Length: 78
Image (cartoon, rainbow, N blue to C red):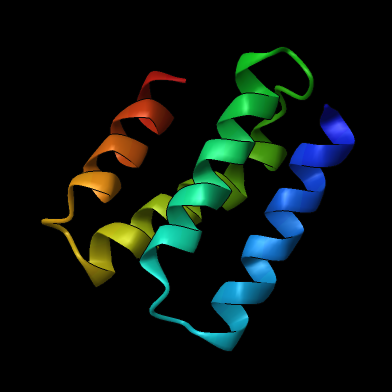
């Protein structure tokens, strides 16, 4: 599970490097980070930082998108 989540984060980060406005990829980064954190796989603050940055960027890009709100809410809950 951990390897799959880390791979998902890496791939989504690559996608955002190719398209810096790919807001749903930012949401996916946050969701994968939250899975790592929420399942007690890695609960360090350092590992949560990519999720924080991804949520903030998605909110900056399109603050009214429902998927962005959901990702932000889940991230804050986690």
